Amino acid sequence: MKVIERLTRQCYGEPVDYVPVSQLCYALILKSFAQCSELEFYLNPRLQIDAKVAFQKRFPEIYNEQMGTFPEIGEFAGLIATAFGGDMAWMPDAPPWVRVYPIKTVEDIDRLVANGVPDVKKVGLGADYLKLIKYFWDWFPRDIREEYEYIDRNVYCGLLVEGAMLSMGYDKFFVWMYSYPKELHKWLDLATRYFIEYCEAIEEILGDAKYIFIPDHSPAFVNESQFEEFILPYLNRAFDKYQKCVKAGGWRFWHNEGSVKHIYKAVDKINAEIWQVGAFDDMGDVKKFTHFCARGNLHPPGILQRGKPEEVAEATRQIIFKAGEGGKLWLGGGGGIAPWTPLENLEAMLIAAKKYGRYPLDKSLLDIPVITKKEWLMGETSQFGVM
Image 1 (tube, rainbow, N blue to C red):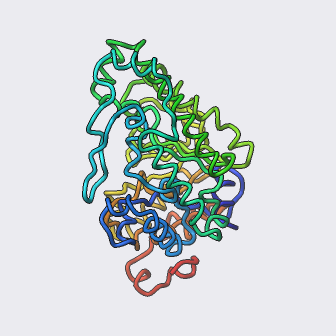
Image 2 (cartoon, rainbow, N blue to C red):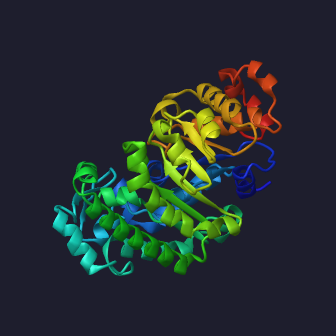
């Protein structure tokens, strides 16, 4: 069974051989594959492709999500901010950040609304990003694209509601939910129209979307009523437009590692098939209280980065037996892979998926010891198809 087939079938609760592993491995760790600084990585698309291909060849049974297989231009935090006149601060070996907000006063919103949606192909980081997408279209190896369905018919363009927040500062956004709610809705509407037009510009290059990946951590910052008023309508405008992904046999992916256990009932209304769950939400509860295929949720700078392989395997086993029944589970980190994560720990997750995650799940394996250090060193785990 191909990796992409296993993922898709598991996404919809259809039979698979074992629980798939999907990671988000991007610049923070891929720069080590390219042996360069983070800024150098962003500035050189050829290095990016080489590093992404190297990671895939190193882990052929792991799916690397869109942020890890698309071109990168920072943490994608500045797409909306720079389109409307903001500016970024670039760091030598760390992610950039928005240093100049396009919205400083309420009057700025009226001015931006009066000017309308900027040309997505001419302004801000987005214009540069579209050129990088075309470069990937021309140069990313065709065999890998076809095997994993990367690049072609994929849409990824960064933060939506959170991108609007980063255009004014989180603090101002939260205060204005109370002080200037009407004006805030005007801004969110404008930012969403820009975001959707940008998605359409990507489709012009890569084809009609089959997969869309939208990261947005904003639900973790608010209560239920605030989420339903200021966040849900705008996220769903984008996700609803891409219902065609489901019809094409693909999916809609919501990335958010922020904890939302306080509003499960509300986030269940997000019209996406997959949710990348953070390390501080319970995978069993996610399966119980929401409709999503749950993707996660080992803590990236915690056990995945600092744990021993056998500890990673045990944590993976716990997730499988907590949330694997009935399918709709992808294993992976509860967020992007952290810098300096040992590659053996990614292998351990895959080994555990094959040892404990075979369907139908065998509950008797709960009594079998986890992968031991001796097994690991002797390579006895090769019976599970890895090593």
